[in-house]
Image (cartoon, rainbow, N blue to C red; front, top):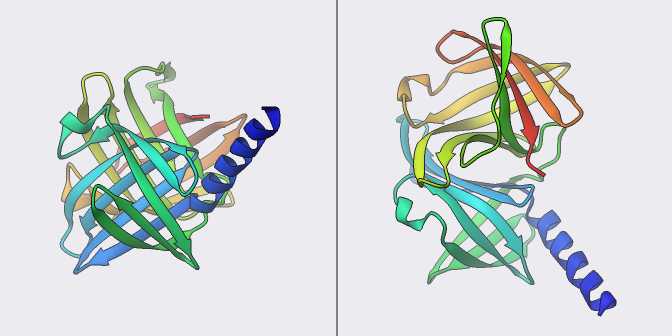
Length: 228
């Protein structure tokens, strides 16, 4: 029994490692991006050229043998799907990932392998207001930021009420204490698409601290904890 259990864990870990990172496919000027990191999947579709946000959804995933099950935590278009489970069959071939679910199939190309100091699933845990860092306790109302090796996306949601408040994302770099975001989509304000934001950043004891100016030009100082 223990041997079988150990084998199942090993297979699940191997599946997770193979899928980890960022993937995409394009249809016209619309980009479809998947980030799979720390047993969490987030999907977004958007038109960067015309600065149009289309959709986003995602949640936690459990791995099986050539399949995984997504437990939906948010869906910008259809909150009735929040709380439901969707199983995806997948096949990996070279740098492509074939996904199939509910009669539809997609072929994705790998963007990165999800490696880097900031790669992971982060939940905001503190925000500076004045001279005081206000703690944000875990709960159904939460803001997450999912980072692969090169891509980022934040989402503000409430898993209890099924509310979706907003999202944004694009590419990022983190080097020599500087965290730089290049915004490719922003659900609440398309004028922010194309902006580049630079923050001072560091990670200590699984807490990511960054500070600088947000997309409105206002001072920002936040702390994020890894969702493990």
